[in-house]
Image (tube, rainbow, N blue to C red):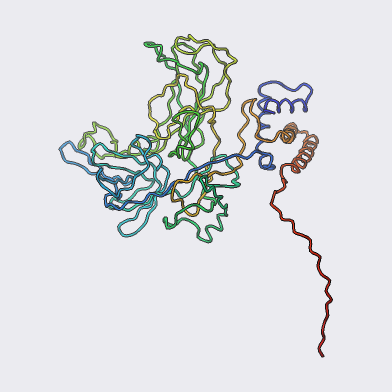
Length: 533
């Protein structure tokens, strides 16, 4: 039974001729989702379990070569008089080596990209010359091979280092792994390999009390247990995307290309950090990578309509480097000393390397036109295209920083298997011991139910439990109308329904192997008691 049928059942019970206005139906839909979320808290056994997979990452230690050391980066700026000015980038670390050097640890590269996006969001330990160890979070890592065979690889970190920090040994590690934002309960976990061993789920208190936590990578191996880690959350963007209609007059093929038909669309976006293993990326559309962390969505853009044969949509999202003022070198007297041409700001080494990517989501609203494609030469039927109330993933920029330029949308199909999820951050899990290799961890989880947006969306509960959802919604409906007696009657029916469902779904018998022992008759023995005087 889907949301539309549930709403019909509710309206049939509350009135002979219920209000059929859109505003009233929307109010009932909100009550259905409210009851749906509350039911997941009061009776989680009615919801179907799901599978969650995450992949571990081994530590990366500095190699035996003295070239495999990190130092605070510097850059040199030439003044007008020919002299140079050296600026220390306290937020950027660099290692310099040649292609012939041995004993240099390899950083995991992403295809042919000069960026090491798999390192973004991980932690790094740095050993200073006096033995002090400091920790930083990696914002972004990238490579400069323009002066080959000399290679320079950079790491931008969250907080500054001092300029005297040179020749530092390092360890790149992942202290905790994030579960999807909608996971509310972890019930079991296994390593998916030939041994297929199960991980013990321990309490955070016991693991910290008995010191079963990572300490500078002293212990690593095949994970044996799993326990709760810290919460991770990224601030959401506060500005809606800018959208506009553009027109292509010189070449009609540059206008709307499809295969999506023209219509009215809305956009939103999220901020992202890092990327995960290739095995957990979206299998339904190419180049859609799953980020390590993703923020809540931005405000929704204004609806934008495309109707003309030469029109298409352009959208623009803010540049996080500009918002964070990330990586600009301020000059005291740019006109008098530097070749800045009157600019107050001058690009620094880390400009554009804040490490924050983005994902853009789209949804269709309103009516659907009857033409699509160049010159509107392809005719479709209106009822062949659904009006989606949910946002779906359109473009993925987890390895790309947004620019101030507009991006064209000409009808490409979004990933309908990747809906925009509500997120209040990520619950992470920690492993003991720290993984020494790549392990695929398969978990059995219970997810927070997603909102029922379309009338065809069906709740992820057993079919027999739909009546409980209806009764729960009626409780809220009668309370809203002020009919407390009817609300109490609905609550009694809801309680009775849960009691019946509990007998079937909440108390499943455990199937255990039992051994039947033979009955042995106990011999009758005479008990004598001796007394001593």
